[in-house]
Length: 69
Image 1 (cartoon, rainbow, N blue to C red):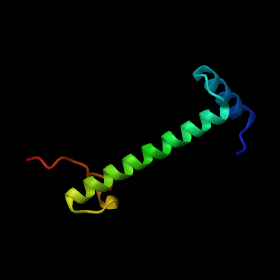
Image 2 (image 1 turned 90 degrees about the vertical axis):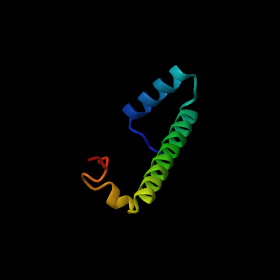
Image 3 (image 1 turned 180 degrees about the vertical axis):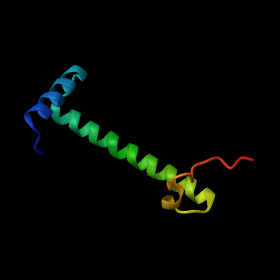
Protein backbone atom coordinates (compact mmCIF):
# COMPACT_ATOMS: atom_id res chain seq x y z
CA UNK A 1 0.00 0.00 0.00
CA UNK A 2 1.27 3.43 -0.84
CA UNK A 3 0.45 6.49 1.25
CA UNK A 4 1.27 10.13 0.72
CA UNK A 5 3.75 11.71 3.12
CA UNK A 6 0.92 13.45 4.96
CA UNK A 7 -1.11 10.22 5.22
CA UNK A 8 1.90 8.25 6.46
CA UNK A 9 2.67 10.96 9.06
CA UNK A 10 -0.91 10.94 10.33
CA UNK A 11 -1.00 7.15 10.52
CA UNK A 12 2.35 7.00 12.29
CA UNK A 13 1.39 9.72 14.77
CA UNK A 14 -1.97 8.16 15.66
CA UNK A 15 -0.46 4.68 15.88
CA UNK A 16 2.22 5.99 18.27
CA UNK A 17 -0.42 7.56 20.53
CA UNK A 18 -2.16 4.19 20.66
CA UNK A 19 1.10 2.32 21.25
CA UNK A 20 0.91 0.44 17.94
CA UNK A 21 3.20 0.04 14.97
CA UNK A 22 1.93 1.67 11.79
CA UNK A 23 1.37 -1.76 10.22
CA UNK A 24 -0.66 -3.00 13.21
CA UNK A 25 -2.66 0.25 13.24
CA UNK A 26 -3.49 -0.18 9.53
CA UNK A 27 -4.44 -3.84 10.07
CA UNK A 28 -6.68 -3.10 13.04
CA UNK A 29 -8.32 -0.16 11.30
CA UNK A 30 -9.02 -2.20 8.17
CA UNK A 31 -10.51 -5.05 10.20
CA UNK A 32 -12.69 -2.64 12.18
CA UNK A 33 -14.01 -0.99 9.01
CA UNK A 34 -14.70 -4.34 7.34
CA UNK A 35 -16.55 -5.73 10.36
CA UNK A 36 -18.59 -2.53 10.73
CA UNK A 37 -19.56 -2.76 7.07
CA UNK A 38 -20.63 -6.39 7.50
CA UNK A 39 -22.76 -5.55 10.57
CA UNK A 40 -24.42 -2.67 8.73
CA UNK A 41 -25.06 -4.81 5.65
CA UNK A 42 -26.52 -7.61 7.78
CA UNK A 43 -28.75 -5.18 9.68
CA UNK A 44 -30.12 -3.69 6.45
CA UNK A 45 -30.72 -7.16 5.01
CA UNK A 46 -32.61 -8.23 8.14
CA UNK A 47 -34.66 -5.03 8.16
CA UNK A 48 -35.52 -5.41 4.48
CA UNK A 49 -36.51 -9.03 5.00
CA UNK A 50 -38.81 -8.08 7.90
CA UNK A 51 -40.47 -5.43 5.72
CA UNK A 52 -40.75 -7.72 2.72
CA UNK A 53 -38.62 -5.65 0.37
CA UNK A 54 -35.10 -5.50 -0.99
CA UNK A 55 -32.28 -3.52 0.59
CA UNK A 56 -32.36 -1.22 -2.44
CA UNK A 57 -36.06 -0.54 -1.90
CA UNK A 58 -35.44 -0.01 1.82
CA UNK A 59 -32.84 2.70 1.37
CA UNK A 60 -34.78 4.67 -1.21
CA UNK A 61 -35.72 8.12 0.00
CA UNK A 62 -38.55 8.00 2.51
CA UNK A 63 -38.66 4.23 2.80
CA UNK A 64 -37.18 4.18 6.32
CA UNK A 65 -40.12 6.06 7.87
CA UNK A 66 -41.98 4.41 10.70
CA UNK A 67 -45.35 3.05 9.72
CA UNK A 68 -47.42 5.19 12.08
CA UNK A 69 -50.89 6.59 11.81
